[in-house]
Length: 102
Image 1 (cartoon, rainbow, N blue to C red):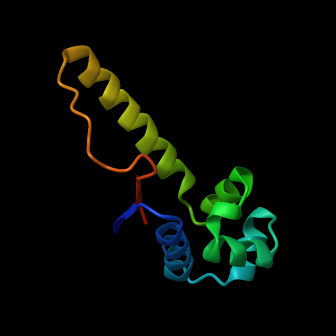
Image 2 (tube, rainbow, N blue to C red):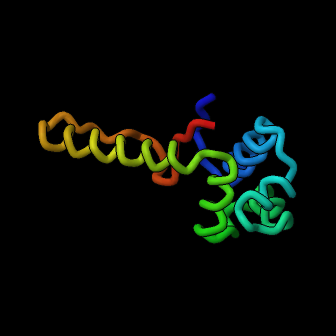
């Protein structure tokens, strides 16, 4: 399922939903990548307080890092191509919007 993550709350809900989809407890997810269960809990309630490193570790536990990196690379390639051909049209989305497949 694709989710549009626009807010910290959306991210928190998406992280928790993906973990549950995989059948993982917070302890399971934390153990996979060397985080503490309380860190997983904190990211699922206030992800804006997490370090980028911890967030990427958690995304790795949820098997999402490769998909997100690929999406970012694809978006950059499409942007560069559109810019070069003059077909680029800015989207009217908030700057913090990030589309991720969850």
